[in-house]
Length: 317
Ligand SMILES: [Zn+2]
Image (cartoon, rainbow, N blue to C red; front, side, top):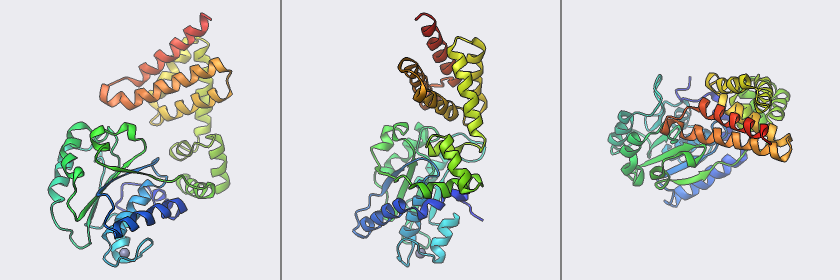
């Protein structure tokens, strides 16, 4: 039973060729003692960055030093999330951010020697803000700037623009390579509990957006279809449709992702003028999502405002 805060499908990309190449490169640098102490692994959640973090942590800690794919008890315990020298820092249940206490605990522990492995490795499951807000981040800055020689920090992010500049400047970024198509389909099938044929259909419905296909429920094509109809009606100055599109952002946990997917799919098929409106609305939504936690923006309000302005713009043309 894994104690890692991720579903099993998140570790499957350890077999992906691009992930294995990047892992091998990191271990070459480590052998030459030039692997940076603080790395930011950049890529969408579930598409390689967690798998890379776990395999790199295992290899850095392992006393056998057999390299990638080692199946000694130490490496296997890292993969199950139960090795004492590898700590995954994640938002605690019922909390929305990484707490200042969690950050302080890392700073206290990091000075200690490893329990049994060669190093201690800390994996921050997301270094975006949120969940890593200014207070906890500032507690970590000195440690991230110069981790003790026996420790490594792996910070996970999908978009460095959503990471505090003070954190960005202290980490070396590694972009996790995108999977090949058959690799993606097999992980998508695993994550959604469906066949690879069905996974291919989902990927097609997501128009190639792997994160959308992976992160949304299996019924997302219908959800995106409904949102497209709603947005089209909203831009026809249907006030009720505007409000319902806004409510969709509030209700669905993945509402912003589904809505921006719907807007982008509409833009791809629209004439130039309408395409710009769709792209503007998608950009406004994503920018607002980035800033919502910092500025306490109300995403629903932003979307309703954008759609209403676009509808009015159309009415006066
Ligand atoms: Zn090992």
